[in-house]
Length: 420
Ligand SMILES: Cc1cc2nc3c(=O)[nH]c(=O)nc-3n(C[C@H](O)[C@H](O)[C@H](O)COP(=O)(O)OP(=O)(O)OC[C@H]3O[C@@H](n4cnc5c(N)ncnc54)[C@H](O)[C@@H]3O)c2cc1C
Image (cartoon, rainbow, N blue to C red; front, top):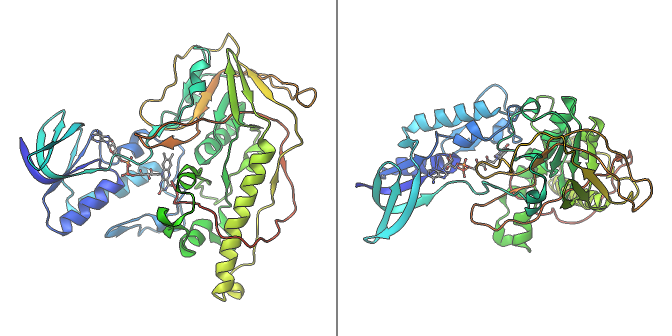
């Protein structure tokens, strides 16, 4: 049995940051990871993913981005390189390929058992990821076996999915990015939209993350919010880190050809059913967006900076079409069989392989049908120990943004939480 003062489980950014502090303090410790350093950025991200936080925001204790493009967005490979350089900068004692199997109290400290060695230690830090379990709703189990299912941690690119249409469940940053990519690749994509947080990439001449950082939104502590559980469940912001600094929201993906639906509410054999709630969830997202931008405007005005920054340039409000009734999605028996959801380790998302036709309800309230062969569960991830909750799905074609500007409101910023 080996002995050390502290065992850190997980060599992601949290484990490495703590290792940096312990190293500076001269404290004996080890960082163990079942994979490689920054494993999730190596094996649980899709090919085109870039950070949605700008480079200047990528900072760790004693280490920050110092490259030529502070306003750019790193690829996953660049994130790995960033963490590798960080670990090397202080000689982090990382052991890769070691899986912790149990932690038990022993002799006033702990016994940490792995698939390689056992440690006796005074302290254990569990840094295995805060929200690393995909939230796949129980509904997924009712899809026919021939519908290929996948979560974003397993998704890589459109070509990696079986032929046919794809139902993407969840419209936060992962679901939107994947639906957008599928549509750009010529695939039919139906996006089931539940509660979401719309956010422009830039506002008043700055990246929105700059404003959220400077106005103190990211400094909000969980003890300070009125409804902690609601804040914890708040969806991530609809953002993408593209070189063009463009927006990603329901309007942009709809213009790429993504069909929008309401929340996924039922799966019955080969038919999935969507709620008629797209208008309501869109309206709630617009209200939250207004509160965020109002908060930024108020901070600017309060600091007397109105004349020194760009004028308010709010995105056109999103609206959904008039009620069209519940939609259904029929899964063709011919779709390729792929077995149960490919969740791998913790992640989020829903996909359904298949293909083909979709038509709107012939009258309000009457179901319409669409066939599809693949579903991607992009609803939300959760902490490993937390209970799962439901997902959303639905589809209602013919959604469009309007061109009017949002009116100002005087409300405090909503609970936005940190970027994922
Ligand atoms: C699609 C996506 C995009 C994201 N984009 C951004 C972004 O733009 N900006 C941003 O700031 N954040 C982003 N995040 C969030 C970010 O990835 C996490 O906040 C961050 O990775 C958390 O770091 P961590 O060190 O807590 O955990 P992780 O990075 O998850 O590291 C945990 C480590 O623990 C290891 N481990 C787990 N169990 C064991 C075990 N039993 N034994 C040994 N090792 C174990 C794992 O292999 C892993 O390497 C994104 C997340 C996702 C999913």
